[in-house]
Image 1 (tube, each protein chain N blue to C red):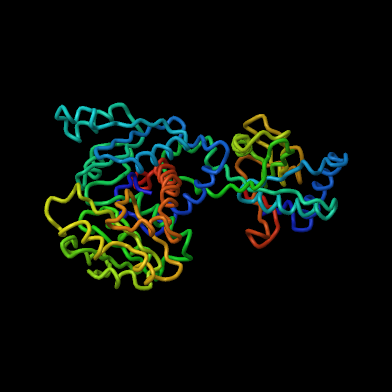
Image 2 (cartoon, helix red, strand yellow):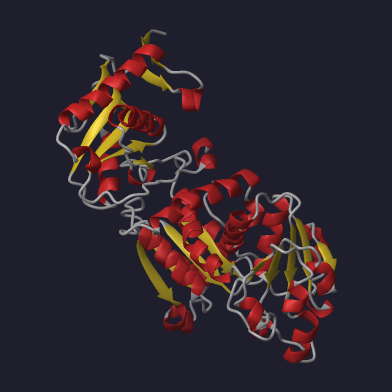
Length: 309
Length: 179
């Protein structure tokens, strides 16, 4: 592994499979009476979250504690950012206390790359702006692997707000690296220019995207990132792009339905689909802990390029 | 490369260990509290073979598990360079509480693997006792650890390496010393 986990773009297929296989072993720890191993004893991990997050932050914290790392959460709303400190200065100050890893969530794309350049600590990207969210894509892949025999040729439909989604970017990068057949669909106003360069099929027809799909991955409508009118109303969005039982019936009979959360019920996904038999949404959350334990463990080791240096 | 155990002698050593286990656990019902846990990688097939011998002799099915000790190693954090060792799955599909656990490994050397395995096992419960079974004891202990059942004692120098090959993993049964 490299020093940091900044994005799926930097990972080879072998490294992706290594994370997934390590996560398989990590999951067993969560089923023990004592859900803790001493592996990262004496390591300090700082969870630096500049954006609200419940699932990802909790998941990282549980993963860190199960590996016996010392963790601390920096609640940015209550910190020196309000007093005007820049991200780089905050990072240098945290680094002065010599943590081993920093888990960063930030609203600006590339914030993790900035930290990676100025910090000796290992940096794990927990979502940067509209760029990447690598641990989400890894846990999605882990969930798919549990249900499907292989990634090659798997039809994966990713539907929703494509423009603002780091989950889309990371998933599209990962799934195409493993040779899945990725289809993306959403309103034309939310199709980012150049999206086909990710190696995916693009369509504005959800029905075409989900036809015979093995996996349907829904993306959240991110109203907090929208500064314009991308579609007339949420109700209309649901009618044209929402995942309903009728649409799901076009997919393969053993389709799985995924959502990175938090869900907008009745906007991108109907409640009966979210809670229905094809849904693996809560499995994704459970798998998140094992995958993050795997990433923390693998990054705690030595760095291959450092050996040469 | 001198071969210290060939397939035939390995089979006899393991059969002898199975007999010794039964001899020490002679009372009725005693065998019911025995469970085998193999340390990955090569302790696992060895544990299965001993379980099979015990079944053939005593007609009793011994619960058998697999333990990966990577996450309990004492050198995980000190790797300055190089990637992390691969973690594999621990599978102990029974309760170890109150059991006599026979921990099985291929080679006993510094004792550090066994130290890690003891820590790992104790996270699963409170066994009545833990005993150690090894195919080869090559000496050079760095911790106060001793095996209860030994297939063969092999005196070695610290620069030599003892390589165990098992049919299930390597396609042949053989123990050799590599200078």
